[in-house]
Image (cartoon, rainbow, N blue to C red; front, side):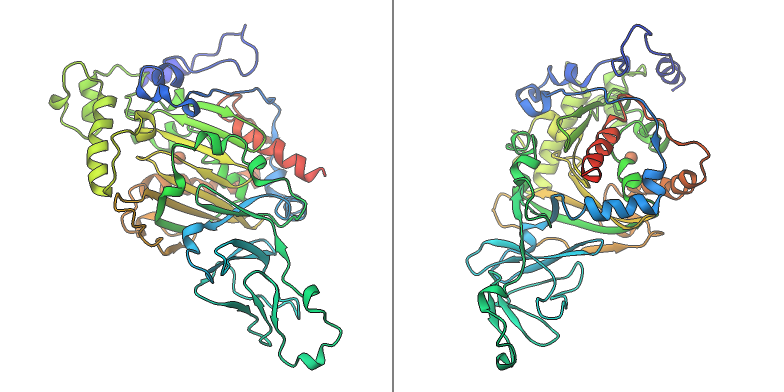
Length: 457
Ligand SMILES: [Fe+2]
């Protein structure tokens, strides 16, 4: 441990340009190029750019005025994932998605098409259903206030006491439809009818994920937890692996945390790729020791095989059996690594099998947000998709350990326990802003640059 700290505490070569310095030791690219992972063009992509090193003002998180700007210029203008397709599998199923004052009702029509409408009755503004609620099998949407109803394609179906509305023309009294689209089994909506196409917004995601099949996975766990802090502050706690050192020290002996690769693929998509099950390249460990650290018997490591390779094989077989799926063709990196794609503004997608996380953050006030996590598992060989998990609601104080079968609960508790203090510290600071690492924290800067593009328009 001491050697690692010493090695990583040395200053960078002063001849390097800002952003060029990297952790000593093997890079992600070097490791993946020796494995079956090298056959995955998405994994081998490498796209860092230096985005500046000025402090990022704390007021971007703490100021109610800044929060109001986001509510006015970001949330009603940007693509955001509303639900999974599997949440509305049959005609007549609906799911409500809310952010701030904005509310959409996502509906599967009788023609099986998914459409999204503003969740507000054209009559007196009543919402068809509550925030976060869902329902199924309805032939039409009926306002619970006066019973006016609309077909699932948004056209008017019926106005009770029609005689009192001679001034209403049926074809002008439909529900307000907003743009929607599907990628990877996620239904996206945008409250802005003039928005860019979803496929443009997603940048490299469809290309990189084309063999990773998020659409062929089901929601095995779904949590909904309040967090104490601005939505960006909380989300940014998940955009780098730098914090593994102090926040998740039990991961230090088995992961290449300081050698994590950070990519900015465009204004909307960034990634980290952290090699797990490698041992720590800054510690002196034999392959047998690493194999032991991964929970195996060190003596069982076959001659000539690395701990990582053998551990991946073990998981292919054990997880394949437990999940009833064939993982024999899954590359070592997808099998083991912590690979996180961030999609602006608020969602993260992990294609991995060992770390199959999906999450999103939504503001509930300037200093609180909701963090939803889904564990997406591959659909079993039978092709029968298990019903999506019910949402487990957790309060600010609740531990993720309350969620049955949530293997990553301990790690997420460590992450979220930081937020009380960070939020108080951001508000208490006499310094203008936070000082970011040029490489490891570049995704945070990218997020703020893109946010500015929305707020300045
Ligand atoms: Fe973490």
